[in-house]
Image 1 (spheres, rainbow, N blue to C red):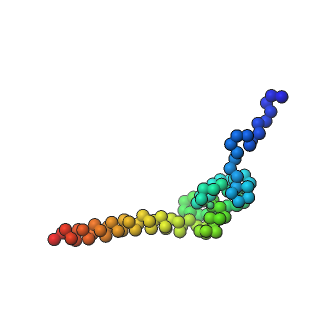
Image 2: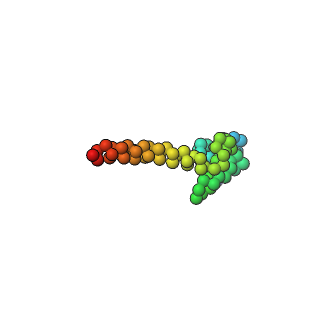
Image 3: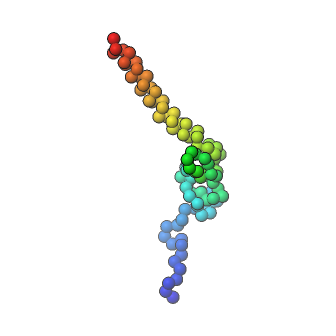
Length: 95
Ligand SMILES: [Zn+2]
Ligand SMILES: [Zn+2]
């Protein structure tokens, strides 16, 4: 008969949880792998709440703060190095 239901899994299959294979609720905020609600934890990463998978929680804990500190360190260290260089050059050329 016409108007039959089209199977949901025809074509692109929905994302499955990396750990248990259930229907994924969304991607992990760290590794971007799809995880379901049972296999992720909510973290406080600042203004908004993130969901990260349990594997990532094991690796880095519930907070993303350490990750942000690493990012800030990677940005701040070259800037501080440049500032030092500019200061040294200024001292050398000021005379
Ligand atoms: Zn799962
Ligand atoms: Zn993850």
